[in-house]
Amino acid sequence: MKKQMLVISMAIIVVLLSVGSIAAQDNKMMKMGEMDMAEMMKNPHHVVMMAYRQNAVTFARVLWDLSSDGKIQDVDLARNAFAELKRSMEKMDEIHKSQMSKMGKMSPEMMEKMKPMMEKMAAEKVAVLVHINALEKALQSNSPNSQEVEMHSAALVMKFEKMKMPGEKMKMSDNHKM
Image (cartoon, rainbow, N blue to C red):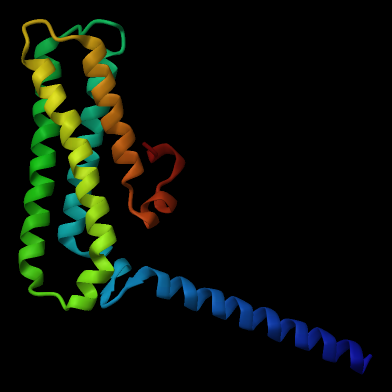
């Protein structure tokens, strides 16, 4: 009986230490150098920027829906949706630039740590801008090609979904998923 209690106690201690170790690793993974990702996600500027991103996703979905029947029923409405999509993208960029200018000079070590993330963000921005420019060009014509509008708006929705923040994927309930 004493031997069983000792084995059970040891097993419980091992489990508790393992859980504590895993929790500590999760905290370390959420921190990037001196920048705490969880804290950054609570920053009001980040929250507003994510609201604009959600707005952009919504208008990209509207464009996708408006063009999915093989014909754009209301071209003016599609152009208005695109204008809101573009405005949201511009606001996100303004907020990002403003925050980056307030951060000040980063240490070379921090710059090196952030380099892969910044390169990835730049590449994603270029990919999004390709679709934004193609939509703008398509919607400027008198009778926009619905297949082109559908293709580029669908690609934007997919890009935005791919760009979600890691914690955001887990937080969203089923009825709010994109």
